Length: 404
Ligand SMILES: Cc1ncc(COP(=O)(O)O)c(C=O)c1O
Image (cartoon, rainbow, N blue to C red; front, side, top):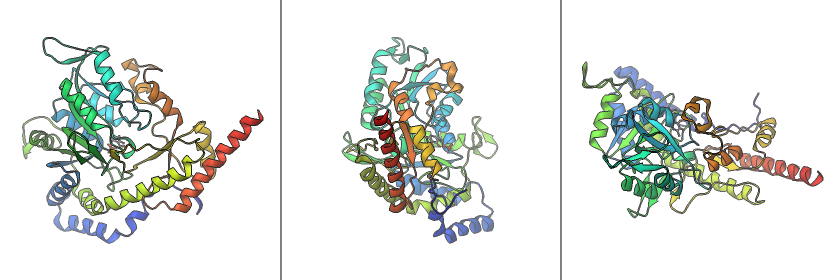
């Protein structure tokens, strides 16, 4: 049972309190108009979110998983294709790939940012692929599949090194679909374009999740694809709505993957507060960094100079992580593991034939990462308690090892 001293992992109550009247009016509008799916409220949110991300189009869909799947389908990914991504992500990234009939190929991550490593990606293209002389396309040697796309995941709210990834994608003629499901409002300084770019505005299409716990969360399921490509936008509008442009005239077979009007209305209300919430998350991250990095026993998040992360999750690395998590849980401090088993070692993907040792960096960090409570209303008093509890754990551990 929680008590006044317990600290939740995230807080889905406090940020909504002040906005309650605005949320209620979204419901009233739906009741008055009877427009529950599609309609002007969805269109308005789509326009606002496209403007926010700096893209020409935004298409509201049923979830982040839908967003990824529809983006891949609209970009033409299908059976026979390989899509390169990371194993330190939520399984939705790869579910979207396999559900298009394609095969995920995992490459390792950067040990400091935990995102797709452009150096390892380059090495993968150079040593584990060959060019098909007839088509000029890259073939993954392990699977024999044509490499068609890369999905960089902007994990924990920090963008992957997109310039280097885009350079490689251009060199090998590959599509880039961003998994921005954890990165609403994160930005990246593009050295290629000499400007800051928002998550969701770099690849040919990008997927966002509005799952309630996300930095921009709905009151249920929701997602969106952002893109500057008109054809892809048009296709996704069809795919999300059973492949129809006009009711009951189906150009293709699609899905039921639309964004509800009530969720879109809620998201419009919340979008106006996203920058403020994100900057409070950033301030909290700074506070944690100062408290936790002192002893040198906790690896705090690394933010390159070209990145502005939005700390969907605040993830540190420690030795003996599982015991730390148990100890924190014993004093009602909630933490999470994102993620405890990398995808290439999941039972669901045993048939892909990966084994321990295939992705050494991913496997190493997976054993050490722990996500600490992170939300805009987290207080400095709460952060101090968490940091002190971690420091105590480390001190006890050191005493034990000195005595043994
Ligand atoms: C990295 C990543 N990709 C995809 C998704 C899928 O989003 P949804 O749960 O909205 O389908 C999530 C959501 O947790 C995610 O974190």
